[in-house]
Length: 443
Image 1 (spheres, one colour):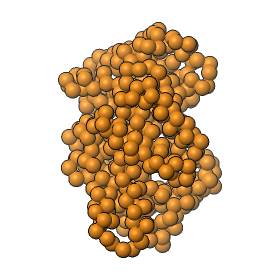
Image 2 (tube, rainbow, N blue to C red):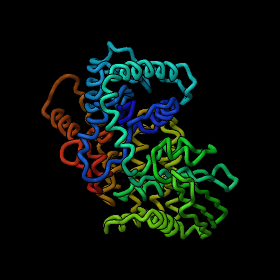
Image 3 (tube, helix red, strand yellow):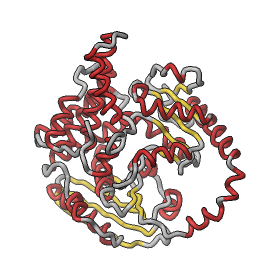
């Protein structure tokens, strides 16, 4: 299990990602957004990760303070003496944790060298070291078991490194990143393959890396790298699949296509990787690999641009406006593009924090679900919007517990934590259940 467990609200993922990179940069392993395979007991795995962590970083934001799951994880970590709380976006801390010193990260600027981030890393180092020392005696007793585990055959796993943008135009970065992200999404649908999370893989973006070292660091059996060159209506994609242990190429190909063929090209690349790794696909997995959400290249372009802005600018009101406008253009071209509706909903809800929009994204989320009832992002956006509406209702009513606010509270409790790490397929974590099983979350 990981050294550091990150507790956060799901919609704050873009805020938390730079912090995860800074912690990993100090050599600690981080559990924050695992790829959970179908059939696993979600609550048990999360409880196991939380229970084995040497330190727990709780990221308090205006969203996460409303999550009972984040607050529960904070209380458990505090009881064990391994809580390292941090605050972003001037969040008001819950009453039960205000006595614990919290590191204010507002203004850290995603810079690991900044004073707030260094304060957090020092606190983490002290907590991790204290926990490691307390378990040193137990380590000798389990050494034999660890050796046996290391000698076991490695499960097939892959890290898809960000494809290099060879277009010579920085504004085309969204396209090369989008290709990489969609390959990660495709391969994640294969149950027999473990895929490194996008945010971890993208920490290597723009860096000259040793493939074997990356494989050892991430404990993966294979690494995929490549490049994208887009010129006008033509695109050239090169891809190489590399054995992480030997550094040998297992498969490599170059594709020159028209942009209108981008979807079939992505299918070819994913299928070629699966074939090179000798993976067996279930019938549903074969079908899932071909699902793109849209067949319109122009709508897809607008969506990729919007997604790029959202991942890099969730704290920037202007970029969020751009996300909304681009998603609107995408759904104008393809009104049934559920992914674009869901992204629009997420951006609209975050924009309400800046006071620029009154639409919290509920309508866009419900439009997304109307087109794809199994889309996890849409369920999460809808749940977050309903939580926010319920919170506003409680705020207007003050402390008076009317029947109406009680109903709103129960509804928010039932679905609200889709904005954080939320319940399992039956009772908790619908976001992960929807992503892992392909079934719609319970809302």
